[in-house]
Image (cartoon, rainbow, N blue to C red; front, side, top):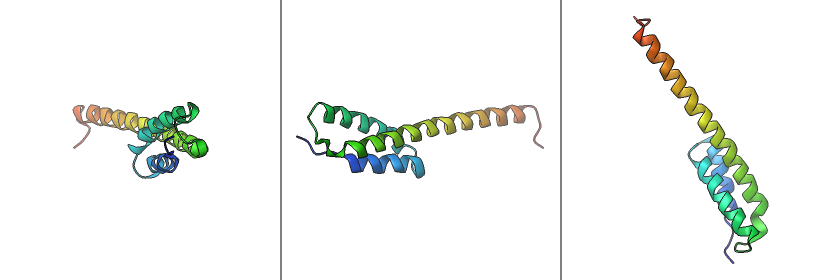
Length: 89
């Protein structure tokens, strides 16, 4: 039986929320894989709750990352449109 990586997943999920947004999708994917391994009996299930918490943080962080990316694209499109209209002197 493999040892769980619950602490790593939780830390990655929290980092994805607070400091490094790219960690969020990594925590989400790692959490999914580890939960599946725990449910199938291949991994130590003692870290299941921490793994779920890290996965949830990863999901929230990924959603925030996507929303920020959409907002930045929208901002630069508006900025480019305003510049093309000659609104900047």
